[in-house]
Image (cartoon, rainbow, N blue to C red):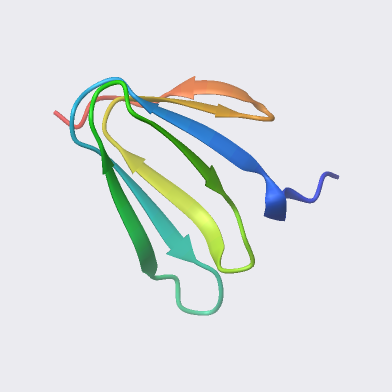
Length: 75
């Protein structure tokens, strides 16, 4: 199985106000970073020893080494 700790993902906002939230690793999962993207903005994110999950709120296209998915609108 592929070690995904260094995996990158590309997030492209399809609407204004897409929130990208990094969640910590460990016994207590917490928010540790948040970004807001407007339509057309692109963010490249990476899983690290501190980031175990990334939450995306809003309509965006997410590209990973496993494929592409589109999230639904916040509304």
